[in-house]
Structure formats: C-alpha cells, structure tokens
Image: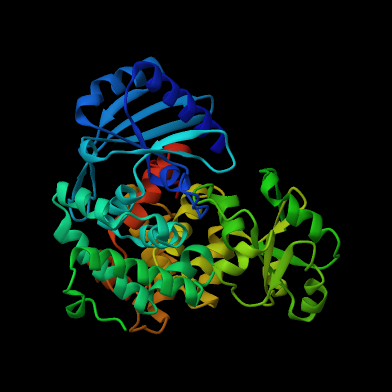
Length: 234
Length: 249
C-alpha cells in the first residue's frame, strides 16, 4: 500500500507540475518530509488554494479519480486492482474540525523537501505553516508531531514568519492558547503518557526541556516583555 | 496456534534473523503486531517489542550487539535513535497466551484478541484505543469473539472493551461485534468493579463522556473525543471496504 501511494503521489505531482498547478502535500507525508519518521497512517492529504482548485480537479479527473465533497475537504478516490486510493484535499483552507479554525492555503509560501529514503521531492508547507496546522488541532498525534518537529528543527524555526503567517490567518489568539496548552502538556506528565501510548517509548528529559524551550521561544516572540505572566512552568 | 499467510514484510527481516539464533518461545507484540493485523498505523521499523518467559530473559539479552540494542524497560526515543535496531523485552509471557499465538511467515505474533486487550488495558492516550478499534474492524470477520470474551472477563477489561466496541459501532453506523458477544460482555461488565478513574487516563483536554449514554451503560468515565475512532473508521473504510456492513450474528 505504501508503494502504491508513493507512485500515485509521484504521478499526481508530475501532472500538477506540467500543468503549473501549485499543490501542497500535508498530513503524514508532509511531516515525513521534515525527517520525522514516527508512526504514520497511510492516508494522503493535499492542500490547494481555492484559485488553483479547478486546475487540480481537472488533473485528478485525468488521472482517473472520482471527486466528492464532504464539507471541509474534497475526497478523490480511485481503485487500483484490489486497493482503493483515497486522497483528502483541503480546498482554500486547512480546517480543524474541533475548533473550526482555518489556515488559508493562499498565505502559505510553501517549501520543497525531499522525502527521506526516497528520491521524491514534495511541495510542502513551510516548517512554520506545518506547526500552525498541527497546533490548531493539537490532538495526540499532533502533540507528537509538533514535539518531534521542534526537536529536529528548533534552530531553523523562524518565529517572525510563524506569527506573520498566524496573524495573516487570524489565528494569533488561538495559537497563543494552544502554545500555552502545549507548554502545560510538556510540563506535566501528560506528554509522557501521550508519547508512550503512541510510540511505546519514553521522551528523554533533555528532549522534553528542549521542546518546552522552543514553545517558550515561540510564545515569547508574540509576547515580548509579557512572558512573566504566562505560561508559568519553571 | 494459528498460521496465517499475510507477510509481515521486509521491515522485520532484521528481527527474524536474530530470533532464529535463539530457540526460545517468544511473541512479537506492540506496534509491529498491531500493524500486522490492522495495516493502519505504521510501526517504527527499527523497533520491536518481544514478550518472553521471565526465565529466558538472560538468553534473550544475548541478542544485543552488532547495532542492536536490547532493553528491559521502555527506552527513550533518543536511545532507540542511537541504535540501528532495538528490541524491548517484556518478560511476562504465559503459556495460554503463547498457545494462542499466530505464526506469520515463521514468526510468532501475539494473538489479535490478546493484543486488542493489551491495547485496551494500556491506554494512556488516544492511540491505543484507536489501534484496538482498528484491529477489531480489520479482523471483524475472523476474530475469535469467544476468546476475546473469556480473556476480557479474566483480565477485568469487560467495561473498557465494551464501551470501546459500542463507540466504534456508533462511528461505523453498524454493529462491530455480534449481539450475543455484546450481551455476554455486558453481563461480565456489570459484575466488574467500578473504576473511578478516567478512561483513558491523563487526558486533561479531552472532554468527559463524549458518548454519555454508552459511558453510563458500561460504567466508564470515558474521555474519548469523537475524532479518535472516527479517524480509524474513515481511514479503514478506504483500504478495507466494506467496513460499513453489519456483521453476522
């Protein structure tokens, strides 16, 4: 199934490139492109700006996909022998169902990253955009992904870009809340419970402190001079 | 013991090679075994959890070396990253459990019924309940419901298994388990001691009793957001259709 998804993804991205359609790979494959080799589900998620959707729909149709809309995303489906391939596409915005928060795809500058252990290069969200979409939801798998991303890329995170994109999406207040939540999760035993439940492993104390420092750095960038007030986890 | 023909894949070749050096009983458990059954959430490829008899632990320690680390307590992510391959030994194997093993391409895996209950028991977050549901959905036509019932009763997991099965049925829009099974499980559950702890524990942000009627029926303080099992159903309905058909009774 993994091989089939990879070949489908490659074919689709090539077709998009030929038609000059800008599309982003998000979800598990998007996180993997940042080198995070944690546990993954085998679903394929894409995001596209509303203006580029008609062209992407055309590409998907040419590739043999059937399209259906479920409200917050469009689902593209096709059968390959006994296997069914399903792609979820966020059109216009990446939406978190729980909070109804939206991250507009149009404000995402995007980046290209090589998928580890493959020759495939993927158009993905910037590290900051990926963190924003993960923080919006902050379910257990998002907590694990955010912590892994922060540990691997702490030095490369552009806090100015993070808050610029967050502000452009109207998500500043929500993300401040989420960062405070994440700081609390990292400070308490909850992060160990989530990490162990997902991976069967413990989070190293040094790694926990490093992730917490990165969260604080992000929070401080939005609250220069106000860090003393919140979140208090020293 | 059951022998099945679904291949575990190349990713366990490193483990098969090492296990072959020891002629001792073992079971592959944890994420490797779960993925073998549900094909939903991939395992970490260089990490395996092996259940062994306590008396054999000294023998199993000999697998360490040549880039393979052997742990007897849960290692940290950094420790696993530092080794090429890692084995976590769990010296808790019992004869009945070993008898129920599944042999897949010559390797011994914990039975899906036992693994499902392991996941129900160990749940500290959203992943374990989701994986237990994924195994039951993926194997709903072949799972041995009588073994699952007996083991759930013996392990005092009837309440937690019952609520998880009925929550999954709600998300599926169809019965996951046969009606006779749910009825007998519920009888076991009512005889089980009530637990005042939240299930899963440590879920500070998760809403309490998302499925209030089911939580009350099974006597569980349930903290399981809808998206947890909803995501499993969504993903598995793609890859193992038709999920949304009622099972036979």
